Image (cartoon, rainbow, N blue to C red; front, side, top):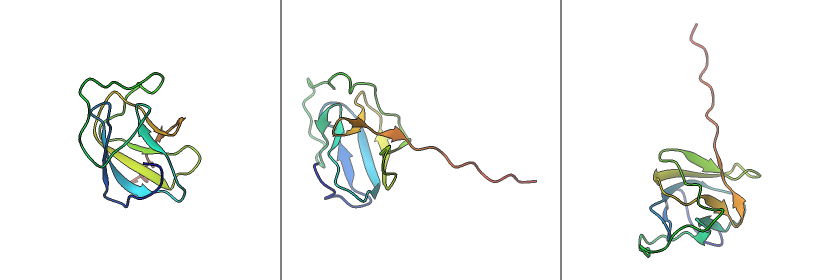
Length: 105
């Protein structure tokens, strides 16, 4: 997807692996959302022979949230783990850090 045509709750699927995500926050700028080097799709159709291309084959982790390293207004939740790496074009998305819970003294 080349621009933020998606809204919170939109499900996106990789075309080259099993990775699936839900958009939590769509971000404030246009992005070229990819997985495994190929644009993601709202359709779950994929070519079973397709594989993520290097260097975008490091995988995505189930249940983890990913964000853009330069703009944390984008947030994706991985619902299906896969072999493809989530990117904005060629920029790798990063795991969103958990906020520490307050101490309960």
